[in-house]
Image 1 (cartoon, helix red, strand yellow):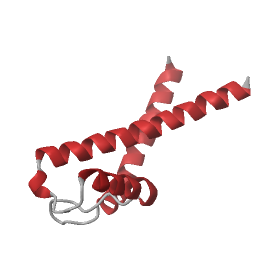
Image 2 (cartoon, one colour):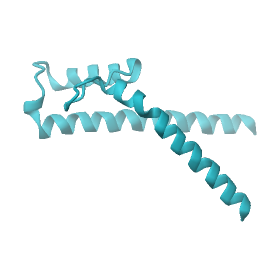
Image 3 (cartoon, helix red, strand yellow):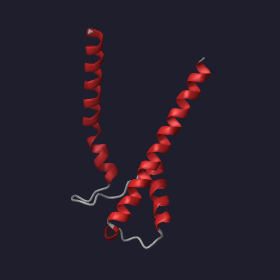
Image 4 (cartoon, one colour):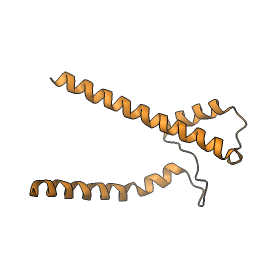
Length: 102
């Protein structure tokens, strides 16, 4: 029984990872199609996409922000993760208490 659960969980994790890669790839391509003047890289689009996906998923390098303060996106995300976690924990506690209440 536990083996089937582990298989199920592993499949879900792999599927979630593949969906995240697919969403990142589609977003990257759509940004290049809709605003090509914003990108100054002379390399071919598949090469840029491969580099972006590799850096994003192996080094958490999401590039720089396109609006002030023009900082790395990963830094901006990490600065605000505390607020996200506090909201998540508060909502989880509320949901558990509301569920137990009936």
